[in-house]
Length: 308
Ligand code: HSE
Image (cartoon, rainbow, N blue to C red; front, top):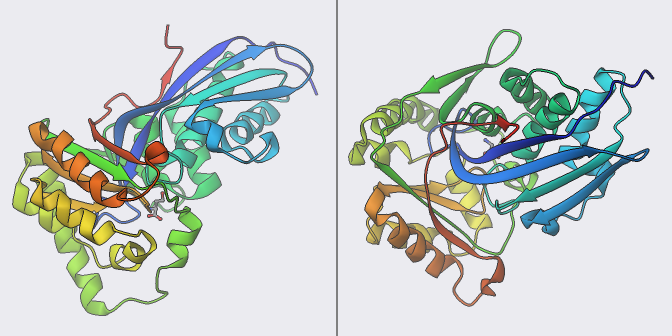
């Protein structure tokens, strides 16, 4: 293996809420909680230090998403990955904010920066999508904002969509984690024709509602029959927490990604209140340490390399 010279590098990637109800497996929105990773060349092997929520990961470095993506880029460029990655995240794990996709995007971008290659959101997106298949998380992580991932003949196409600046977002999650594998395992292999026909109408309403901050269209668009009804039973208290979110002023509430978190859309000034109401139900009686409730804002930047 020829060894390209490695250099220090830093990247930052936002989390994302995917699906948004009727946008199942298509739509994702970047939100303002982040994974940051730095690389320092040193030694004769790759080391990984985790901080923040990443301390909750049990996987060793061989099975870590970020380190896997980093190594893949190094191998494609015939370079031994020698050095230390330090990764820190504020994003809850397995709670519907795309923590796996953001790690794959971060690992790809960090390796390119360490090799002195130009930053490439396209490559980070395609590499993450090829690895885990969840482009509706990887696209907003890489590009920021509201993104639709459209099946292409060869590769998926990422479309940026308008998002009203008047929307507030409230997120809450219980201490219980739900893996994407478990959440996909709850889905039926077939759905009724009626449910399939309702989906595109709701999705059209959702896109216009998100662009114009229309409360009725957002409520209708966050309604779904393809995944939400099958996944709600995996999240104790979710049904009542959604009700609490509506009572506190949400225009619409749904499962964030594949759960276990919930995401509500509401007027900005009500986001803290809606998040607290949902958290109050999801976390009733639970140890509060790993339980979540927070107002969030869209991230319009996506992947940032070399924070300066
Ligand atoms: N669209 C995917 C799902 C996202 O809901 O299964 C997983 O993060």
